[in-house]
Image 1 (cartoon, helix red, strand yellow):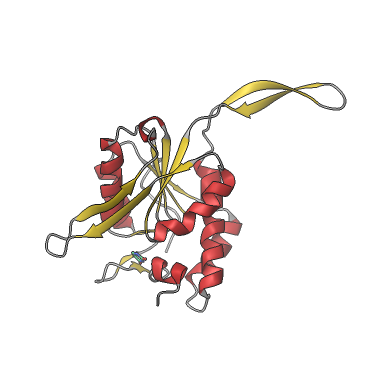
Image 2 (spheres, helix red, strand yellow):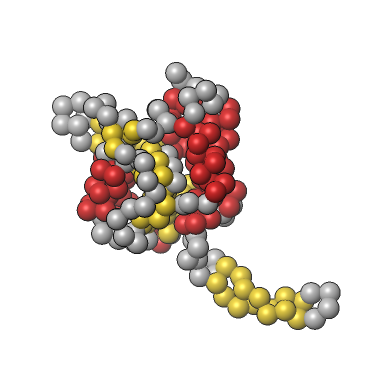
Length: 216
Ligand code: URA
């Protein structure tokens, strides 16, 4: 497993030591659900921090107790967080801590048993989704099937600026997303070795949804 990658500027690996430490705890099979959830929330917050680095600022003046300070303030770009159900839900709280004014849209995907194609079974977006910058969140980017379906859905809604934040990515999933959508940027804490025959990321962390919700 290596953090060096050749995917170019559209893939950002969050290499901060705190992130890598928390990710190791997350991977550990003995980490209980409660701690797993907390770690996912914290990692989402760190990723949100990286993914919002390019938010535009505007000049402002602030009266300190001593004089006028020339400062910067967020221009107030409208944001939306879109978790892919169900594991993506685990990342929402951390993202909202960082951007409390963001709206949240939900997107549910299922995989067709015969075609193996992902289809949306649930979608509830903020009314003005087309005019928002969207952060799609899902802890695991494996084959890229759900992520590419989510991107297609959001592009159809007219969304222009989309970022995808995952915690662990397989190279195959990254490739699929980059090829599918020429404008998306991916944020991840790690790029793993690949997938096993059941499409689990290796070494990965197991089933993120099951570990977040304690269903296994
Ligand atoms: N989804 C998961 O939860 N884990 C994987 O390894 C791959 C997809």
